[in-house]
Every structure is written in structure tokens, then in C-alpha cells.
Length: 183
Image (cartoon, rainbow, N blue to C red; front, top):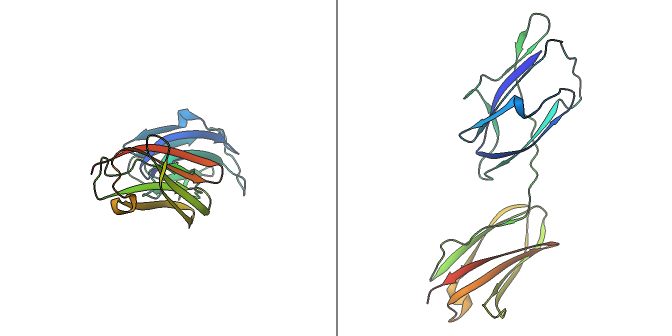
């Protein structure tokens, strides 16, 4: 007959709401302080089995996990003619995308860290270029799926200083950013 719940997990954006057995839309959802609240009800009882009820795709901070809570709305569903209250459970899947973050600190002197996320395991290459396009440093390694941190030491760069570019290549994915080395 209906349900409501709070989905916590540093949610930054709702990218898609798709109906399944239940007809849902953006009108059933609100966000506040990194959480999503969803509420749905129907005058007619809907019989459910193993079918997907609905799908909501969200973007979130990778360092947190999703959880159903009672923070903004009590998490419960209502079934039967007597509207018996039952638990709401989360069945989540994570779809990672390749990303390249800004190095920190920037500008830097002795060392900097480059964060990146890989959607598929395999070899990835980080290449450092100067303003003329000359390769100053290259690092290639096999990485697992997920978030990674690569620390770049100034000793590996020689006496290089100034504006540099770093690039991440993994399969068909390629992204670059600018950094400043102070010597």
C-alpha cells in the first residue's frame, strides 16, 4: 500500500528515478543534508514478488556507504488491508566510474598525492608532462577496482619546477589536470 524511508550516505545528486512494478517519480523523493527521503503510496494494494519495484541512481561520496535509517522519515512499508507495518531493506549495487582528482597539496614542494577511481581492474598509467609536452615522469601499475591514492615524490621529478600536467590513462579512459611544483 505504501512505504517511506531515509537513505543516508553523503548523497550529492539523484541522477535517475525509474519505475519498476511501482510507478515512482521525482515527486516521491527529496534530498537534505546528504540524505534522500522517499515516500510512495497507492489507493490500490499492489502485489509484489521478485520483480524490481523501482530503481533510484544516486551520486555519493565514495568514502561512505549507503544505509536505510529513520533520520528524516521512519523507514517502514505498509501491507494488506490492515496496513500492517513491515521493514524496508536496501538492495544496493555500486556502479563506479573512472575519475581523476586534483592533486593535494597543490602547489607542492616535496610530495603530492593524486587520487583516482577505476571502474575496471587493470593497468593504469600516470604521466607527468611539462608545459612543452615533454614527459617528465611515468608510473604504470596494475590497480584493482575502486579508489586509489598515488604519492608523487619531488625526488622522482628531478629539479623540475613550475606548472606541470598529470594524466591518467586506463583503457579508453584518459583525463588530465594541472599542478604546480615549487622548487
